[in-house]
Length: 245
Image (cartoon, rainbow, N blue to C red):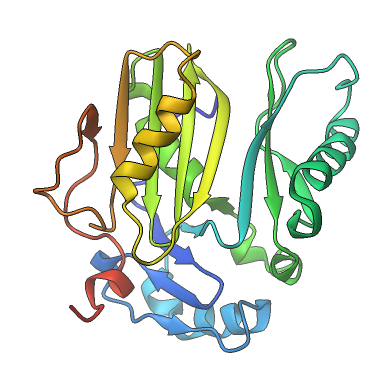
C-alpha cells in the first residue's frame, strides 16, 4: 500500500492555508497567500518561478490544515470507488459534524477486507484542482509515509509532525490500518501528545514507533522515550527555517 517513490529530483512545495513554502534547498522565497490559497495565486507563482521549475516535476504537499486523512472500516458495500466516496462523506459527517471535509478521494485502491484510506479536502482546494501543474498534490503526512514506509517494521506507528498537526499512521504488514490526527496548540508538547495517542491504542501490537520531524519542531535534546527519529534535525521548509527565535 502506498509504495515509496524516489522523488529526489522533484521540487517540493508545502502548501498551507496561508502560505506556499518551497523546500529550503530550492532557494525560492515563501509566498503569502492573501485570503487563502487559490488557483490564481498559485498560477502566478508558477509563472514567476518557471525558470527554476524547468525540467523538474513539482510535488505539492498539502498541510494538515487543508486536508483530513482517515481510515474507514471495511464494508462489503465498498464495491466501487464511487460507493466508497459516498460512504466516506457520511462517515466523516457523522464523526466530524460541521468541520467535515467537502470532497473525498480514495487514496489507495482497496484490497478486499482492508480498511479504506480516505483523503478529505478543504473546500478552498476545489479551485486548485483545475490547475494542471498543481494537480499532483498529496497531503504531507502521506508524502512522508511514501518516503519511509519500506524502512519501517511490519507492526509500528509512524508519527509525522508539522507546525500545526500530528498525524499517526499505524502500519500493519505493508498497509496503513489506522490514522489519527491531532491539531496542535502553539504551546503544546508534541512528544507527550504522540505518546498519549499511542498508549490509547494499547490493543494494537507494535514493534516500534517512529518520528518524522523535518521542520525541527521538537528540540534534538528533548527525550523521546520509545520514539525513534527518522528525519534530519534541520528544517526542510524555509518558512520554518526563517521563523524568528
